[in-house]
Amino acid sequence: RQEEYRALRTQPNITKDGEEFTLMMNAGLMVDIPQLEESGASGIGLFRTELQFMVAATFPKADAQEKLYRAVISESGGKPVTFRTLDIGGDKVLPYFRNAPDEENPALGWRAIRLALDRPGLFRTQLRALLRASAGSELRLMVPMVSEILELKQSRELVQNEVRHLSKFGHGLPNKVHLGAMLEVPSLLFDLDNLMKEADFISIGSNDLFQFFMATDRGNSHVAGRFDTLGIPFLRALKTIADKAREHNTSLTLCGEIASRPITALALLALGINKTSMSPAGIGPVKDALLKTDIAALRSELLPCLENSTSPRCARTLIEDFAEKN
Ligand code: PEP
Ligand code: MG
Image (cartoon, rainbow, N blue to C red; front, side, top):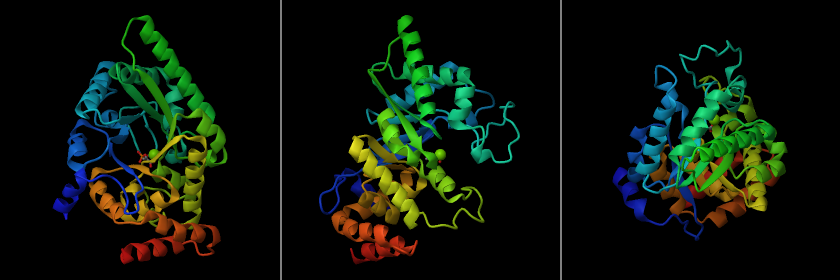
């Protein structure tokens, strides 16, 4: 099938009934970049900057960070790249970071944007490297594990400070900085209007959002597969986000692993999430499934099921049956 998927790369991303969609890939190191061409991805929807930190023996210096970001941008050949700021902690451990406390619940602990805001020296170095590497182009930057909007506002202030600092010393700057939030913590579901106003774009990190939504550890094999990611409550949450993003005209992407599963990809587009980012191997199978689908027809079956269902697992069966008929 590999050859068939490769052949799809040049086909427009449009469903059988004419709805457009965008498929991007997740990356974290230079070795991932050739996959852009190979997979036919429209861009990098999630660049995990902590990977450079995880493979190193000590904190990468500012110039090493800048060098990597420059190389990623230039090797991506003009396709858009969204850089996620450091997502350290939880499942992403830095062995040389001795300041890290022993934590009983690392997933709920001192991690991601919490850690970045508490270690502004570390965060500012990264922001500066990203800004310098994006001189003359647009920088798309997103903040992981936002739990309250204040964290996004504080991040924006830090970005603005670095912009001022760089311009004072005559450095080139990005033409524009887009600052987005990852939606991974359920508290934001109850503050969506403010979030959509404050963020330049939103990216749903469904790995973490599902983990916190169902209180089920993503790395624990006894529970990681226990609940259906197409369960009705989770799909309702995704639809609420998609509706709000459309109402506020805020760009929305989903970048967790569920995006790489064809049946789930159908559900996401039916809910109105038309931009996703996934591991490169998922792009061919997902595109193949979406091209064949009359998404409006699926939507007209799925939405009533979301509203009326008393059975939490009915959506998967519905979509699988629908896909089978195609
Ligand atoms: C996610 O949580 O869905 C996500 C994309 O980020 P990560 O898997 O790196 O936590
Ligand atoms: Mg995450």
